[in-house]
Structure formats: structure tokens, C-alpha cells
Image (cartoon, rainbow, N blue to C red; front, side):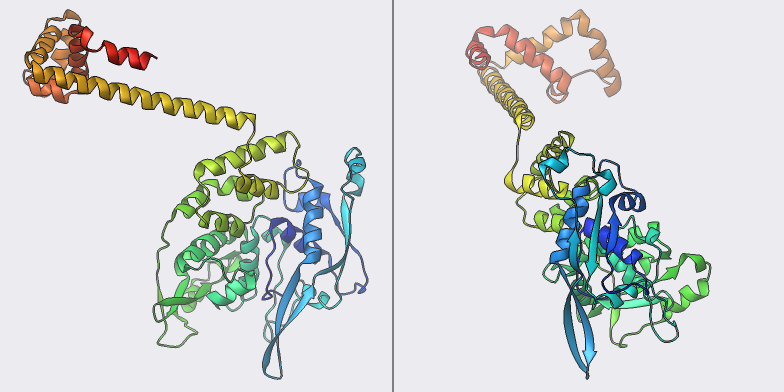
Length: 442
């Protein structure tokens, strides 16, 4: 089951883990499992304003999803597709129900496929570690992990007693159902592996030091990762760590290499908006990075979709998934009065800045013409500055800083002095600037 091919979004994973936690070996095949919304909120420490509809939608999606489990039969690798859930019972999404307080009935009843049940029990059953691998963990270890993090945690927890596990990149992508995503290893490592491992190290009972992960190559291509796995309960056992570091369970000619992930525009946008879009709105990391990888959406597009989604949440205009609303808002360019007003204000500000730049350029060009015709104009402007009593202290401060008297080049290079010269030229030659001021006044 741990190595099956499937990928759930965050709410599907919460539902799935809650279901697994409720299964017992003594259960009858036809047993109906009741998943309470209040328990989901408590166990996963969710905010109280989350909606029951998120859980209902997750159950419905799981009803339509299948899991592919591989096995060996007479030496041949085979795969079998299973449906996880074969029955779902939930509160109907009707206008009449929306007007009522149904908190006492906010649960979902499900039945599971009898054929998949033994695999689900493997999540809770302890095997003899000398004969078989097992995966057994408390729900508390994964409640704060995103979907990739949960899957990677399970894969590594399975080998905790061994102390390390080597997994091919292609296998990892198969497990996660993302075979065609992240074609570049650096993006896959940065977006999927590194983020998940950081969360695992911070929030679970195992430790997987990032710096000790070996990137194994065949030729020039990284084809596998070797993960060190340390139990936090036995972290003081440094000899085990040293022994694991020496072990290599691959051919001698294969070696590990270090590849630094290349930062792309998509990476930067992902980092900037991850907290809101993934952790707050519930969009899956793979969905978000896939959108960013298209290059269609700018920072401004994303910010607009976030603002629209936040206002829709506040006004209770989102009837289904917040994640779904955000994705549609981004793809379809949703807008509203506040966004249009913001755009109008930004456009006006940009236009004013453009006009001011053009005006200053026109004034500079005119000053250049005047000075070319009559070079003494500059000297006259500088003389006025020197004679201005109010500016005497300013000039002295500049001279003290320079350690010498000011020359004409200082009036060109010092921005403050240059602006004073320009102002005096404009005042002394007013009639030659009338057309410019009239044009930009309009």
C-alpha cells in the first residue's frame, strides 16, 4: 500500500488517514466507517471556519479515484487497480440544508472495498521486523505534513529499522502519479523532496538530514536518491549514522553527486505565495507548480486571484472548495470593483509618473538648447546660488565634505546643486519654457 501509485490532495489525505486510523482487524467486510468532521478539525488542528463541504468533496473525489498496487506473480510484475471507497453517505448540498444547523450530523459514512482492506490494515499491523518491513505510525506524526510529505514519510518509515532507503526517481514519480511532471531533477528535488524532508524533520518522529541524502547517478543523470533514516528516539546513536554513511547498496561504478537546484521564476513565485495558496487555500503543490511552469501567470495575476479569493471567503461566496475557486479565479482572471479600482489607481499613478518623466526630459532638453546658444547662462545661475544667503550654509557643508572650494563640475555632478542651477535657469528664462508648462499642465 505504501508503494502503491496514487496521489491525494490535502483534504483527501486527511480523510484517507482518518479512515485508516479507524480500521481494525476484527472489522466485518461490510462495516460502515463514520468519519466525523469535528474529529478531522481536532486531529489536524484546523481553523474553525473550515467548511464541511471540503470533507464532503474530498470523500466524493476519493470515491472516483483508484489505487494501483503492484505485485509479483510467477516471476512477472503485475499491477492491480482498486477502488478505495465503494459507498459514500453525506449531507446533501442543498439550499434547505444550508439554512439549518447540521453540526450534529457533520459526518460521512463510507464503505471500503473488501479487497483493499488488507492493504489498509498494513498501515496499522506490526510484522516481525526480522522477516518483513512494516509501516506503523501515529497520526500525530503526519497531521502537519503536505501530501508529498506524507507519502515520503511512509516510504521512509517503512525502512526505519534498516536505517536507509534507496529509491529511484522514476519510482518516486510513479508512487506519486506525477510521471510527466518536474522533468528537471533540480525542480523535483527542490519542490517535492527538499520541502517534504524539511517538514518531516521538523514535525515527525524520524530525522532525514538533507545534507546526507545521496544523489546517485548513472552516467550524467541522477536516477536515484539514498535517504538516511534516523529515529529521533535513537538519535544519539552516532555509530549507526557513521555506518549508514559508509554503506552503499548500489554497484561500485555508480556514485553520488551534488546538484544545486536552479532557481527559476516559477520557483520564486512558488516560494513567495506558498503560505497563502497551499497552506491557506489548500491547493496542492503539484497543481500550483504546474500552473507556474506554464509561464502564463505573473505576480500581479496571482495577487489579484488571492485578493478575489479572500474577499469571496469573507463574503461567504465560495460554495465548494476554496482551492478550486482560487484556481478558477487565476485561470479566468476573476475581478471585482475593488480590483478594478486598484488597477485604475495604479494605472493613474503609472501615467502620472510617465508624464512627469516626459516633462522633466522636455525641460532638460530645453535647458541644453539654451546653454548651447548662450553658455554664460550656467555661470549666471551658479552666481545667483552663491549670492543666496539662505543657501550659504548648504554650500559650506558641501565644500567641507569635499575639502575644497566648489567648481563648475560640482554643480553638474551634485544632484542638489544641479537642481538649483536648473531652477535658476528656468526662472531667468521663463518665456522659453511657457509652451512646456502649458502642455503638461493640460
